[in-house]
Image 1 (tube, rainbow, N blue to C red):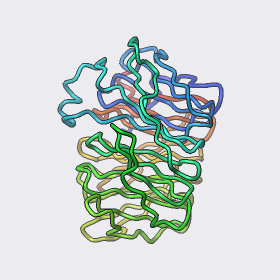
Image 2 (image 1 turned 120 degrees about the vertical axis):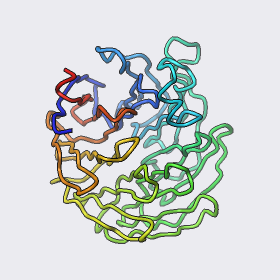
Image 3 (image 1 turned 60 degrees about the vertical axis):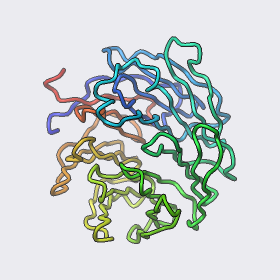
Length: 323
């Protein structure tokens, strides 16, 4: 991690980017932008060619999520990178809707909307798939988060336990729990079996904007507009560490897949950083964007990072030995 540098850089759109995500089989990455569009790019080659452009949202895209592969991580490692079954993508938008897309390059349904999830009373903030791939969670400025059946588009759960705009959402690896965070600085961990909040997160003093679960299943991280990242432990039901991470709001947090040995953060200070999760020591500061860094993701093997920025570019970071 200490040798990470810019391996590739690409202009992603004519207006600022808002989201980025790497497909579960590592062959593709997706970006969402203020132009209301999603784009899918070839990550397995060396040129980052644009493969698919999805149009349908009426306002800017604010979040995206790849549908998980059925069968989990082993399937992701052995699956062909151009397999159509891996290429379904969800997005959420300021227009108040989430959408499910088929993004199979070269196929008849390429860029087609498969499902529209409507019901929120205000703009959406984030979306995330349940690990099973059968459900999609969305957060909104209407103070709620909701759970949707991906196959039918039906709303399964409307949870209104927040008292400010709801933004962050992340599902635990086995799908039993989900964490959400809001603009009051409060978070909740919800039991997916009962729909009840089992742990309230008190400690942030400003907006909770992002969250991610450690692969161990009992720790998770949250990032906020007070520029810090907090680490929480479900066994202790407590905040166990606070990282003074950035000089501006923390827009995204992402644990390395597999073992969670590293935590990546992205910030409006124009930087991304990588932290060790044993002692929370800063390992690497990634500088190169000329605007706010709004999102970050790992490739499934944990060897590369991808960042997106308001400077309209996305960048792939890798060990300098791979250049």
